[in-house]
View 1: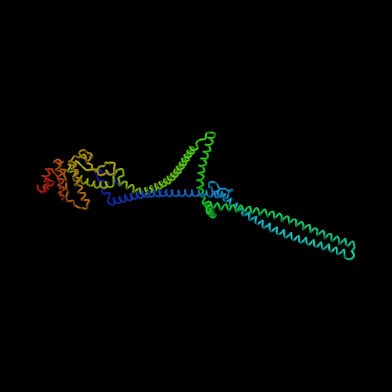
View 2 (view 1 turned 180 degrees about the vertical axis):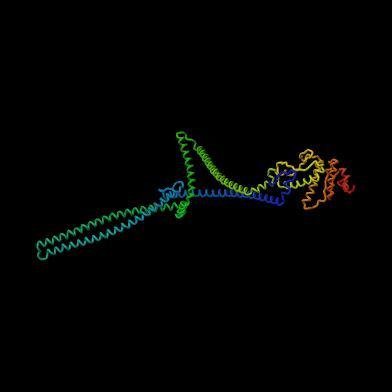
Length: 535
């Protein structure tokens, strides 16, 4: 402890001379440093509290922005949903936004359109192939017809040759005719086979041409159908885009890309929409249950029920709002708890770091077992020296050896009330007494002894500076004649040491014993007269 043990006034006090002014200055500097550290900790806590408030405000602002963006997105989705239903009635989007479902539907529509384009391209290619085949058949048919005409011409030439043979000269033998007839028969059979084959090719080509013409007609009809459907779809898409939330097809594509590229925001919106849908389904279920319970009963007042429903819906909305506020408050409290725990950790670290300074501060402020502050401790050392000098030179003489001064060890309970109380040790009673038990004359003797001793100690502490004069005001009237003589002897001893002693008193016996006197005589009207005289 800083302030040490209690002074008893008996023997050498271990505190006297143990504390220097340099040590006191060091201690006071340490106290200032501890107070500075404490102020810094308080400032840090205030700064963290301000940061927490600013963070909360930023969170509120972001929450409002998110709510606004969610509302805007929901409105845009509703408009997009209406436009989509107009263009693609067979591929409807969900009533409430769902990322996977929307992406699936969009992918299906894109795939369908791609398939239609691919199919149209295939039909165009097939039609071109059929056209080429028809042209080839026509070419083959023309070639066959040419061949047939050639064969017919050759048969006519053969008949002409035979006629010429019959008209020219004598006839050949029968065997020659038979041989020639056989050759002609074979030749005719060959020609007939060629003609039959040509007829079959012609019929096959005509049939193939007819089939290809029908297939071409069907393909043309399918192409016209798909082209009409595609044109109608493009027209409806253009009208829907014009009437919808976007300006053109490029803006529509940008909106689709936004839907695909912002899954986190869309997931949040899905959750909100799902929560709303759950509430809506709950209300719908409650309405259905109410209708089932009221089946066959008299129809109630719908306006009243509507009012009650509105009231319950309002209560539900308020409860939902309270729940949201409670959740927000819980999150805020958790953040504050985290901040407080961090502050507590910082404070504990600062406290641990400043433990010695805090202990020193407590000791200096008197927060110790003896409730003794630093200032009383220093003054107590000085007072001890004064009382020691008084015990050695004055109080014993003035009290005929009865009294000795001691420093009191009493504790008043508060640091500013301890350390400088003086007690009297009574040799006759063999015990320590409080100075409040002294009589008037004894109190004067004690005060005189302390005053004279203090003058001596101050002169010593002042680096050799000399105190040439002492003045004592009143107090002698309460002394008996013996004590008064002892007091005058003590003053005489002080005077013999080279000091001027001035006594202010109305005691007649002192007037007779003091040779040099300054007499004050009242004149009235607030005036007085000062005269000097020798006795």
